Length: 295
Image (cartoon, rainbow, N blue to C red):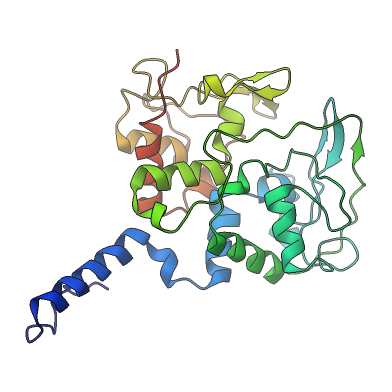
């Protein structure tokens, strides 16, 4: 793929050359995912873009993910108004994980928030954001989840206190196509959505996201670091990222460094986002520049 698209085609008619150039351009835009196996693509998504381990992987005393118990659940509990749940074991363990779930069961849980027995999953799993998954990517996530080591780790069952609200971000109500991925801003919207960035960076009103204020930030996140507050990631020139360069936005995402060089606080998984390709990071920046400014 690094060769010039005309290499070896000196004999070809012009339309063949144009066809070859067009194909190579399409492949270049689609990115390295096309060269990956489904499991490799799933690993890239689960461990990087989606950062599933942030909730589903237990942590060592230092706070780092304990990869010997990868995705086995219960690093923390969410006790909300409508539910109390522990992060589930999503390894293929047959007794305590999802080993008995078929491919269709896993896809349904991710896209609709429904367990194989028909019970609803608490929306702390952002399945309202996952409806945009391309068929290939949701298949890759399933393939990867079935490939990780099974870990026996029983997690307390959920407690549902009241009817649960599932909100879907604007434009995220249906699957996107592979053709959409050739447009940088659309690709960025896709990545930001499956990465559920706006879940944290959009204000809550009565426990429901106020998407009229998409990207404005302001949610508090207490932890060992103190209380971190999600920042404004709209295109506003002073309150948001409007005056930031592409490199500065990428540095904030992957290194946790602000425009002025100071460090951002967790829980944003900077080291995981650092595994993303530059093409994907550039697409995210392209999309963020289209988010209407909010002060």
